[in-house]
Image (cartoon, rainbow, N blue to C red; front, side, top):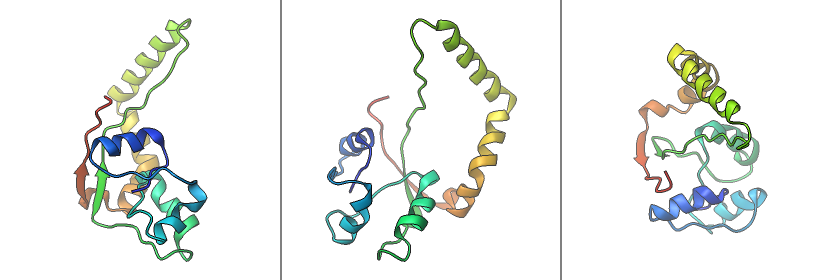
Length: 133
């Protein structure tokens, strides 16, 4: 498989995948077509846009249906150590947004169409471990 981000590449290696990390984004689909690797992974939030803008009508490649690879990957905020008040404000704000249901509303607003279009709820999940968390 090909990987475009080093942190994902190492996670896939830790889960037993052979990972190719050569070339660049513009060559990945040609290299996939040429059989250099078997597949490339993209997040659900980017897969359709990448497919429609870079693959469809250009390469004999298709999106895999019915299955998805899933792994935990935290969102991290880095705060200057000299600004602990900001860190506390972010922590408190995240807790408020989660408790109020606003996070879920925002998530649905921006991502429910992707989930529905890709039928994520109906896909078989191949769960990988993230040894870094």
